Length: 147
Image (cartoon, rainbow, N blue to C red):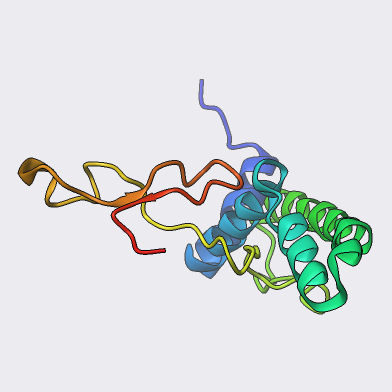
């Protein structure tokens, strides 16, 4: 007994084959990156920092916090949309007048390489460098780096 492919499978695979993999792959990757905002809250931290620097410390606590929360929730929503619609053409970023296509980081805390044997070539000699906890929000501790 032969089973025919379901209409849903054909509807998902046909646009992928027609467009190649670059468009859907980028759109799905952007979606995953944006949904990851739930964990890192980069827009929230960046907005608080920028409001504090340019408008004063009290603006960073109040207005910067609300702006950052708004941007973070918008980024999560855009991520869910891009994941749900990644096989459907129009692979360009959406909502770019409000959010940049790539997630933001606070200017003082861009992530670097982890202090890990994969990235450190001199570990056998007894010294190495890198960030101790790059995935922990607020961690600025690095090894062998001038302040």
